[in-house]
Amino acid sequence: MQIESQVIEIIAQQAMLDPADVTPDSTLSELGIDSMGVVESIFAIEETFDISVSFNANQPDASDFDISSVASIVAGIQRLKAEQG
Amino acid sequence: MKRVVITGAGTINALGLTVPATLAAMREGVCGIGPLEFRDVERLSIRIGGQVKGFDADTRYTRQQISLYDRFTQFTLAAAAEAIAQSGLTFSGALAEKSGVVLGTAGGGVSTWDDNYRAVYEEGKNRVHPFVVPKLMNNAAASHVSMEYNLRGPSFTVSTACASSNHAMAQAFAMIRSGMAPAMVTGGSESMLCFGGVKAWEGLRVMSRDACRPFSANRNGMVQGEGAGIFVFEEYEHARARGAEILCEVAGFAMSSDASDIVMPSRDGAARAMAGALEDAQINPQDVGYINAHGTGTAANDRTECAAVQDVFGPHAQKLMISSTKSMHGHLIGGTGAVELLACIMALRDGVIAPTIGYQQPDPDCALDVVPNETRDAKVSVVLTNTFAFGGMNAVIALRRV
Image 1 (cartoon, rainbow over the protein chains, first blue to last red):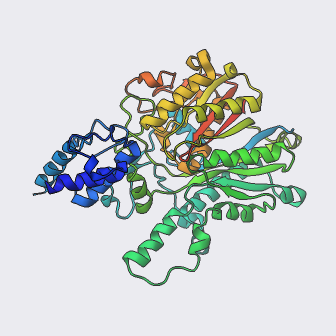
Image 2: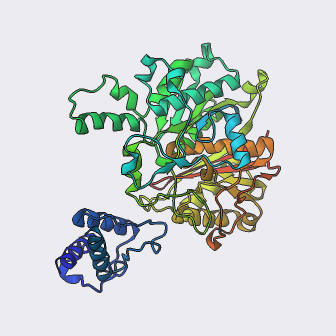
Image 3: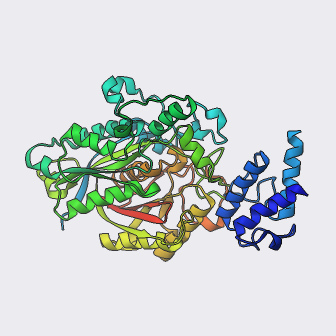
């Protein structure tokens, strides 16, 4: 759950919302986060969790890291952390 | 209003260390993009670029010169030597007093910043070379060209990211057209292919890891290049009176500002710059045979640029050719418009249209004749060259066969 609350914190900050207004089901697009906001969110996630997220803004759907919602981001982080061992 | 022609061209880029070598490579569709070679490259996730190879600064310049010449200045001086030699001009007397040098660069001496930050931060040194500031400043290249060739007139450096060169050349053109200067040395250069330079770009997540494929549906970003393109712009009667070889005429230009987003391109801003250049040059849209595209290979640029071409040219958009030579030499950022001007000269003078290489899949959002993969022989009398910068600053130049 700690990962989830940290992700909510990052996404809320990016969307300029109160963390209480961001839920696991929230999608970045419905929160109004644009492509630059997505790139900045990924940077914050990489720095916070010490992971490397593969993401190319030219092919946002090609990444195996699903950046679309809070829940999908949490799942992606858990997978990358598990791979790190 | 005076007419303005180009009487000299020079370059250093990943395709060649001279104009003839570069044009031969463009004609052959050579890819100058390959693995980057510099210190700490293994710490980058982006490891390809259009890096200049075989450029031996130590044999071209003295030790004292190298202590003052960042790589972007080295490229500039080499390209300027070629351009000015071709023009046959010697700057002295009244000609020297009125002729100047206007160049574009986005980053200036990036590798000088990089090397010296490394020295003080990473290596913990407390002393840097005394010439760090005059070496890295953005106007260093223009200043050294002015000193080398006695250019004593209006001289400065323009910095508008990826449009720097076109903004610079537009200024040089305007000065000659207005009668302010008889000749100008102009163009631009860039050298960001060092660890810090590429690391900064990597962060934006718009760079490709494998290739620059402008207009191709499977494109995945831009690839950076480096080098310089330098030209001698000259008043038409001045050039004719001395029997100079004229490469082409600079017919007009326009600049526009999107005033909307710091990185996303604007269809309207691009269209206004192209339409403005046609109007300034008093050219009918249907007379344009070729456009050298900005064509960065990013999802956003190529789609927006093609839509803007459609807006400006209407049905004629389907008849003209548009290619991006960035697929071959990479994106030279502040120097890119200058190197791409060479493809325009080749189109007008030689009737050879440089291809967009690496093209694999048609994209319905880029449904124009992008001259995929194969060079085309075609007689064209008017061309445009586009540059659209981060920050929404656009500059388009129109050129005509003489």
